[in-house]
Length: 111
Length: 111
Image 1: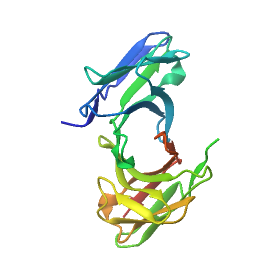
Image 2: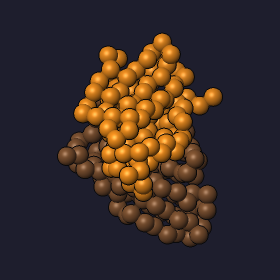
Image 3: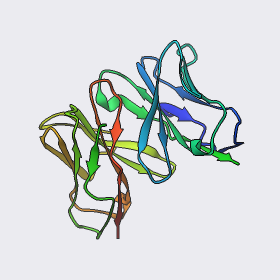
């Protein structure tokens, strides 16, 4: 079983729709959680951290469920510019080598 | 803004050549990383460094070495390039809070 798993997609949704992705992790001792966005042929960029209480940044909401060991990303009122691959990242805390990336979920927004 | 600069965007080398990939960051970050990214396999950690002259193996160090003589510079070396090292190589740096800042990547083709 992979340490961090994501549905690879692609998710193909119309502009204005709400879309949600989940990411599951296997290590219950994981400490920090992040969502990154990666455009085609570009580097990943930090989208947002994920806090235990859940957090929001504009149209984006991230949540953490420690009991079920998953994090989620919700995008409301999706824009064409949201088309990208979204990477889930989980860290183990004690070592920099314990930064684990999911394989990414591809999102395509259609007009 | 954090800037992580990789020396080449595209590189073509021949099998058996020694290849140097350079990465420089301007934010005085302690941690620096080298990843490779391949379709369907996601980001895989090759090596990381948490201080000058310190290095640790990641998940796939075979065929690679690294050098960190100065805090701002982290080099990846392919001792004898092989075709299975054709990939996108991404350098990243991080302060101690585990958020990663990536360079724009080097697409290496080994013929």
